Image (tube, rainbow, N blue to C red; front, side):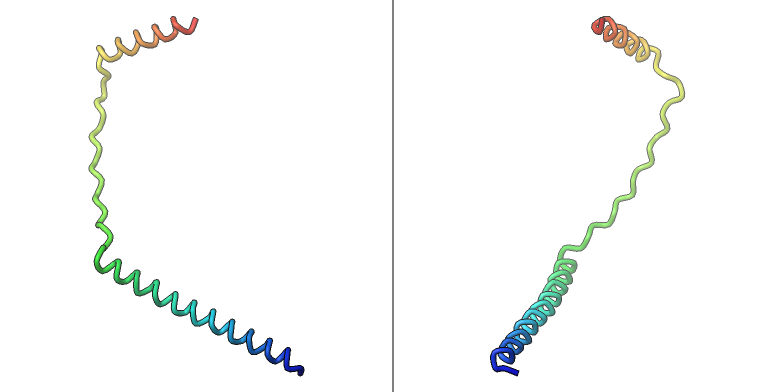
Length: 79
């Protein structure tokens, strides 16, 4: 094997090893940061939703008159 190929393989191993070690350190760093953040800033407990009140069964007659007048006015403007 020529010395150039041997040097290339050595540099290849060194570079890949360096990247591997860096990625392992990055995983540990993010895990530690996640633990610290969760310790000092825990997630808030979800607030239970309030039950909605049932709508009234009958419609307000005055409201129906107002709605009918608004629809009539809208249709008149469309012509």
